[in-house]
Image 1 (spheres, rainbow, N blue to C red):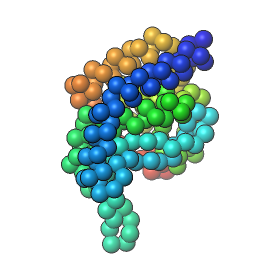
Image 2: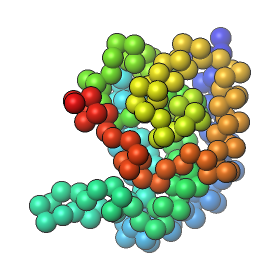
Image 3: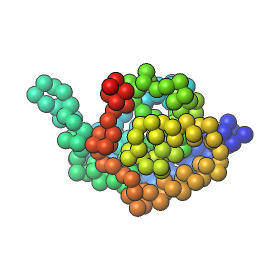
Image 4: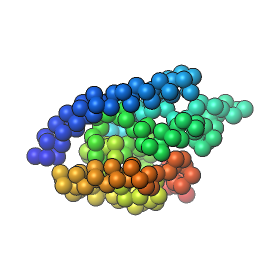
Length: 203
């Protein structure tokens, strides 16, 4: 009952209330990023959702689009702006994903939606992470975030899917709030601690 009906209802009304409540912060960050990025304040990228259905995730844009002499984007660490670093550290970059939650593409709690190019590199068991809506936060994020190795991280996602319950979601929300307030396990540049999954599994 919770997994199929209650969870989605809580997601919808919770996202709606939060968007209304934090709309001043949303607008303020958007304006600052519009000025500092000299353009759009939003980062939009295709990600696999429930049943691997592709959707466009929305986040505040924390990196510029600077390229090298060959026209390739510079490494993430070199493109991260000062304002973007602050926004990531406070997790404010995640706010626009409330729109994805409203649309039914995401949930508050669930496995994080990763890159579409990772799809061929999951094991049959790991593919279970796509049987539920992806989340803004999840069990892996409150268990070490980008400090976990890929096997540990994906195992947490599968464990969540197989044991999904209201009690677990409440615990994850509480731990997420504590981690955000204490800046625990936050890595400003994930690529500095975690190799891309496709590169890792091609070895």
